[in-house]
Length: 337
Length: 249
Image (cartoon, rainbow over all chains, first blue to last red; front, top):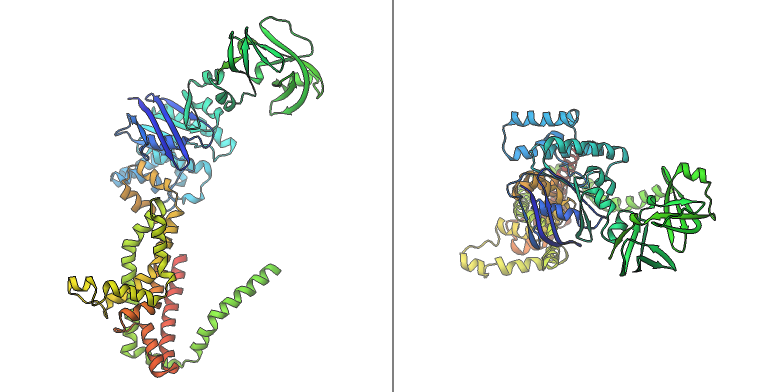
């Protein structure tokens, strides 16, 4: 049965959710992604039934077992690793020997079998996370809820954790609902994502689709689009600072256009083509990134262009150089707000 | 180095201020008098009575105070500040005034006494009532602060794992505030033992240790008050040091 979140609104401790409408398929890996303060934890707590929404309802949750993994794992500090994992089983008054064998099997799977008698305070971040997952898995949940489970980890363990989540999802075939502020994480995990900004889900869909077709300036900003410009459009041209940018729509009183930094080409000579926009401008800034360079050019508007380290070195770009920037009309995203 | 020296010196002044009168009183007391005093039925029964009455007060405070502390730590509601102020009040008001206030509710002419026909003034119960009133803030505030430090998400996690609200409270929150409950109870119990003002108004007899000390000082002078005082202090000191050691383990 699918999980249906219908018209949920909730105000709570400075956070607010507004008219959340989502349908999450059974067995789906759904990632809710949004900046901190967007109300992500609130959604999870409402789905889990820990908080009552002010209005709206969650369908398909009754009698479902839930595995909730909070950001800081919430391992019970007065219980050792074994007792933490066994907590949900003890509550269900399962036979002691049965509990012991189930905990040990889980611990073996998650490679924490050496830690069972340890105090939870002395575990590393990654170990704590695996204990929390084991504790949730012990009750064989139908739905897993993950609240920013990787934000407390270093980069390396974060990558490993992503792999673990994917494996876990395949194995358990449970519904996974995961919230994060990290869009890259969402991309690597999700079947579908929902973008939550200021308490609203403002776009929902397959990760690639959302990445390539943001529906608003807000989403484009959140996805890291550096080139977002607004203006009026007439005869397929958006006029901004006396610059006429050819756009795929005919007219609009006001619209935004967005271009990804890696969809723009820079060159010393003009590239002639009717389906392209070409502008001439000066290099104002150069930022070194891990595998590429970001060049800021002023062509009347400031445009950010990503180029590979190799082409950067070949072109020998310096601040003050005058270069051409070119981008296809079809690579432009247009939205009205 | 200088920092440590100055801080140690200032701290030492405080320790001496408390320590000197106690040590001085102790060394001025002949051990044999102390032994003799401790064998006086009036003395040991009053010390036992004091300890016991404070234990009753503390037990009642645990039953009612822990739930109150939990609610004050976790919930927001209208009038919460008023309740918190009310709880703190017994610490500030003169304890004789507290005794007078208690008399209006539990005294011989009170509604309670008339309705039930029971007189509790001058009994051990009234001593416990007086002790409860003046010392319960120590327990409630300590436990409240303890609950405040515990992330609510621990309980929420327990609930998602299948626990009821009660079960989550008793298996998660309560064990996690164990230290605050123990130290709050001890503070309350200790404060109850030392109570004089409110107790003497509700019960001159049976005599608690503080009342006995007052009576001996009043009727026979300093010399006769000291042995009882030393005895009470010694026992209290031993109990508290023992508990602190136990607490660390």
